[in-house]
Image 1 (tube, rainbow, N blue to C red):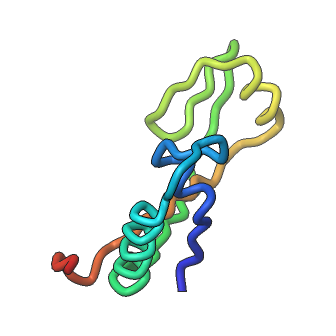
Image 2: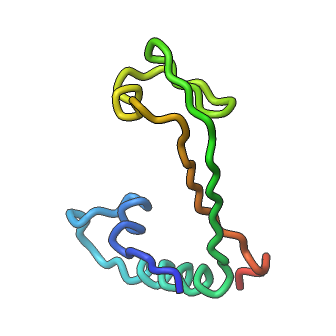
Length: 96
């Protein structure tokens, strides 16, 4: 089951602890959305190893070029990187 951090969800929606008033409707809608998500979302992930080259603060990872002195320092001595991506595929388009 997908774990949902309600506090983070409310924060992303723009609601903060300092907001006063009744959040019953918002919490009810959030409960419904979480229920739909947990019933329909199928977690997936991708992991890919890509070659890495570094030259004069320019990092090349596969076909991607990044200019960053800090990243260069972090990757110094590496010859490859692993990229991770998580995504969700939905089982159904019906969100009743």
